[in-house]
Image 1 (cartoon, rainbow, N blue to C red):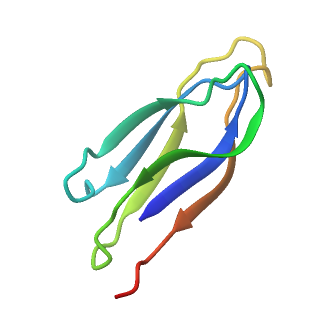
Image 2: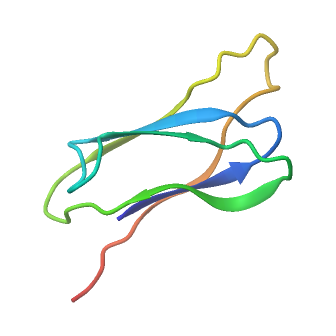
Image 3: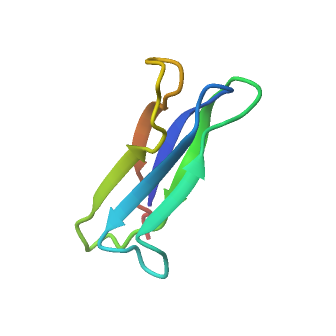
Length: 86
């Protein structure tokens, strides 16, 4: 499993996550929003199950074009890779 943790806030906007190859039973690309009228830290922005026997590339992309630098952005706290034990 991969989980992307970040902050949501009033000045945060749209993003995409691309997982290559596509995860089992899922899409290879996800679109989301980190907008929230209140600041909230440590939120799950994206999570999906992965095959533990496959190597993946995970790409996070901030999608907003911003005419005013540093006023619309993304905040990421961590990428967590979790392997379940049997």
